[in-house]
Amino acid sequence: MLSSSEPSTALVPVSITPPEQRSAAIALPDIVRRAGQAAVFAAEEFFYGAIRNEYTRTAYRRAVDRFLAWCDERGLELPRIEPGDVSQYFEGLRKKGLSAATCNQHLAAVRHFFDGMVMRHAIILNPALSVRGERYEVIEGKTPEITVQHARTLLASINTATVVGLRDRAILAILAYTSSRAGAAAKLRLCDFYDVGDQWMLRFEEKGGKSREIPARHDLQQMIAAYIDAASLSQGPKDAPLFRAAIGKTGKLAGTAIHVNDICRMMKRRLKNASLPARLSPHSFRVTTITDLLEQGVPLDDVQYLAGHADPRTTRLYARRKNKVTRNIVERISI
Image 1 (cartoon, rainbow, N blue to C red):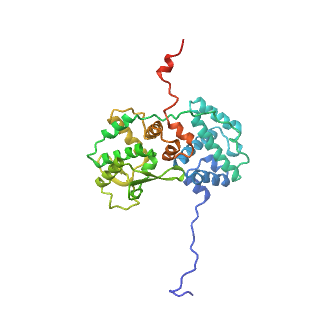
Image 2 (tube, rainbow, N blue to C red):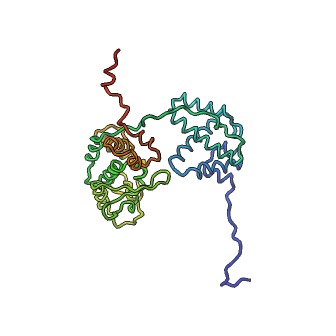
Image 3 (cartoon, rainbow, N blue to C red):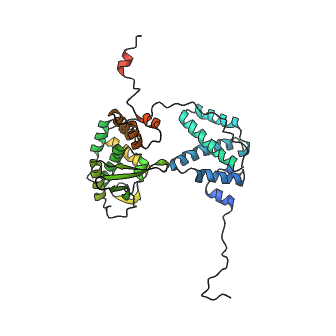
């Protein structure tokens, strides 16, 4: 018998969730669960482990769920899906008017999903592997450009008498003066805005796990500092979110971080208040910043680094300084 001072070595029973209950808890499609435990494991791995970027993961999950629902409606079981079925599905997407880019993204998601199924021996062959995507060449991005004057008008239109106004102005100024993405701005913490002696810096956590430091120009530094002072954040924990969510229409801020979707909605409201085109988005600032710098003769490599692009061809897609059809050109047509 063990004394009270000796540790007990008795085994404690551990409750293990059955696989079928675990897969139901994470809402796997029925067609996957019917295919067996190997398919369940592969689906869990694909949906919850293989893709780190949350936006890619959400888009791929939506695409695969849509395809599997289509198969389930037609009585197709996972191991019996053939290339003809995949091709028929994507023909239907095209007839519904989905763009070539969207169809190709959906096809990439389905291919990736079935790659995992083959790897885990849930199926023998990937039925989407031989299905060709749409031929699609991007010459210029579709994101609408916000003009320099409109950007200035938008920033000047914000009422900075409230902490929410100071927050919104600081966020939009960051998008304009750093070419950062709205998602990266939403993730900023207090410690990501810091003084290095001769200047203030912003550190962004970008998609793909990239971390970048960008100097805050003097006016941007003042806008962020004014917001921090008004929100009484300077004495808070350094790992706390820099930009906080608003509490309804109270004009007060919560302790939680603002979400990227809230930034998008906020910009739409600010655009409406400033009587500016509603089709503009936070991404429009990237177009304007990249175009403006290239037109000033800033080297492409420098602009590419500012934008956080791995490939200079991506940076060129944002530049709207070329390939514009002017009235002078169409007036010269001899017909």
